[in-house]
Image 1 (spheres, rainbow, N blue to C red):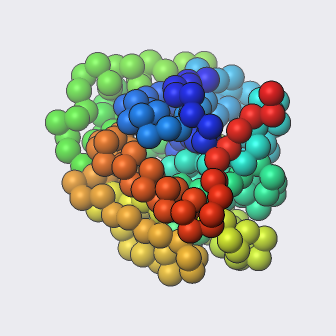
Image 2: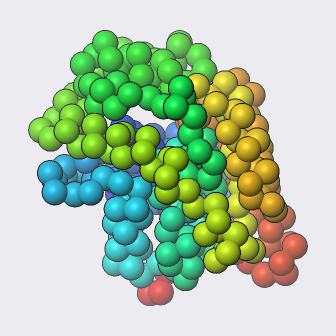
Length: 269
């Protein structure tokens, strides 16, 4: 678990497939300065987490896992900040357990509109931990290749080559490609959470979930707000953390002013 800040509003960050909790570290200082408490953790099969062969690795399985974590931490009404797979997980959780989720920040998200087949990343590319494959994946992730330094490639390769990582990431990527078409959360959000504050954030140069998905997602969720970040790819919170944090702070400040009460998230202890 990575944690920063001590504000009353809790942001629980959920990373994308093949990523891990520390991808959010660059944006944490700016979010903490805006009054948020930020938590992020590795999903099963990712990063330094365990990689059990019998875990489901589908978005709904990750949603149940995060649900258990929030219950164990006695957290309610958190704001889920989810990127790609993490967005689909967050949307699923928001419908399954309304008491746990007070808002969604969905970044280049899956699970709202169908993913086009030609945009799907082959599971083999996600799960390959070789330095060459990792460098190609990270270059695809961000808008500028200059950000992909040797130290980042080396660290990512070592972690994604650990015992069980290749099999877990392959299962997760394959399941995500399938469920990004067959397990959409749009109708459930409209039925069960019609008043849930939803912020969509997209990198203008996103190659993984291209910007047209952002516009379609906005159109599919009346009331959701879409913000597009220039010169950013699939991880705008990583590439321009200050701008990203400002967008999140502005959105939830406006939500609080509009509703007349805080969308804060506090623990029960």
